[in-house]
Image (cartoon, rainbow, N blue to C red; front, side):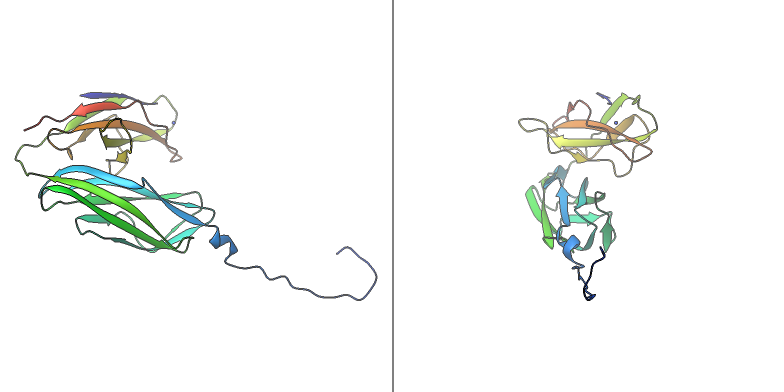
Length: 221
């Protein structure tokens, strides 16, 4: 079992004149931007016929942004978790989930495209995953960590990344806030090594920094 440690006018003479200044209603919107994090969402290895998920987020900066459409270039990747059109207030984020369902072994990739009234009017996010041979054996990585000592903590988020040369490019694996200090991740693949971190979330929806990462290796068949 992996163990994680949580962290939290002036008057004057002369004839009066009337003037009207017209401001552009679109000036503030032209400065609004929509971004997506992470820029590449790697769901990792998933058995053929099974599904794996990962969570990403859209963020509005410089003004409110209304997302009008979202599409996937590859039907193996299905986006869910947001209802369109969706208005994201400036400085806020909206999370969405991508489900990867491979139909054959091998690496698969795709592009998510989001259209909005921001500048630019569309952005993209790369999604990737690897289909592995279906097996009857399944594994679950069991995680546990010490409770946060910060006040008003209402739950935790768990993030995972495939281990390359180092841990990084984390994607959230829990679809809803986890109320306890333990979690079982069953969307893992045989023979893979993963990095995990957690964060604590308080009642104001403020999220702590990542905990110290730990590694977990799934046995090979």
